[in-house]
Length: 234
Image (tube, rainbow, N blue to C red):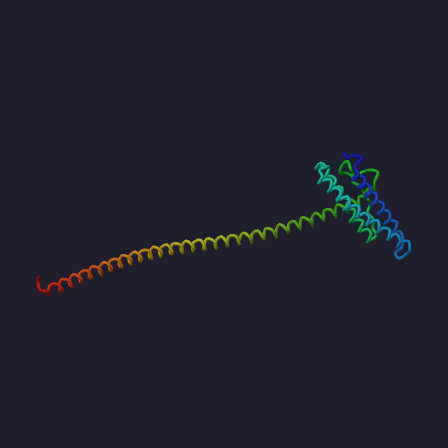
């Protein structure tokens, strides 16, 4: 159970009571013909009260968020108060509809000590109204499930597209890797060939150089022998 000194619960009770007053005011308004002075005054009053209801509801939501972030509430209490706020939000939508269409729903408060209706605040719903609310809730749940199903289907389609793209990219990467390996092999082969050619060229140049040296040496000897062979001896 919540503490009676909890200001959030006091504010919640005031919103519940305001909702009940709005319902009463709407029923009073609908007893008068449209276009009459009294009807117009009641319309203005209902508009102002519904706007005040929305403002207080937003304030309650902000206060609950602040309490949850400051860790002043247990998880169970937080979830329970979220349910209470959801009930007020549902009533707000009903009041908005009633404000425009001229049908005021009976207002039932949420028990702050549990999940049922609390005595002493608001009015009990008739069987027909309960049935209509249940049908509206079921319709909203079905719509939410349909939207969730569509979102999951879209996510699945996106996932399949991403999977196909990943497969294509992996194949492309494999092709690039294979091409790189082939190119690397060719580069190594060409490098070995170039080294072999350089080695052979170096050997050829060395052999040619020595051949020239030997030939020149032989020519020098021949010249010397010829030169001294033709002179008279001493």
